[in-house]
Amino acid sequence: MGNRHPMIRLRTSVIVCAVVCAFAASVAAQDVRGMEVCTAEKQMERRTGCLQSNIEFLQQTLTKFTRETQEKFAAANRELLAARTEIASLKVALEKVRGELAELKRAKTPGKPENKPAH
Image (cartoon, rainbow, N blue to C red; front, top):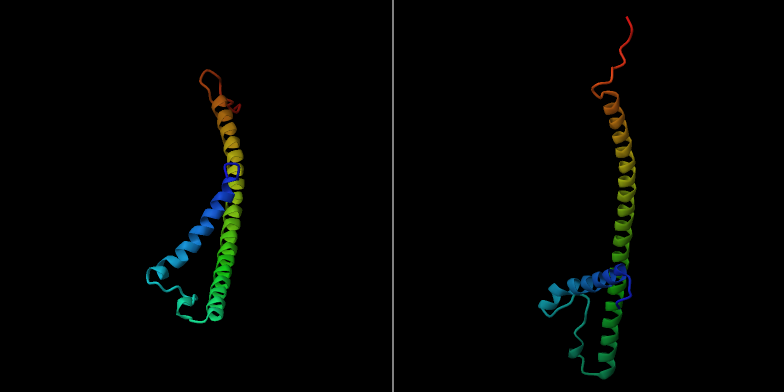
């Protein structure tokens, strides 16, 4: 796991955190919205069906959270790219202004006669 890219680890952590947080409030009350209580079923076939239904629900929820998280990462990456582009253009503009300022300072250095129009 040491070789993995930090964004992959972050993405995995966010997904796990999202799933845990989504169920945290409901789990405290021992009731997860969308989940069935399978222990109430006496017949093994019905209990198995109930558990499979819960697994499908959890997989769908995880898929939904994964998709939402990926969309948020993509949006954040787009914003980051736009910010980096803007920073680069501002750096260029700043260097241009610094160059112009240096020119003005050189033109107005004491000891050098200023260019005055002839009368």
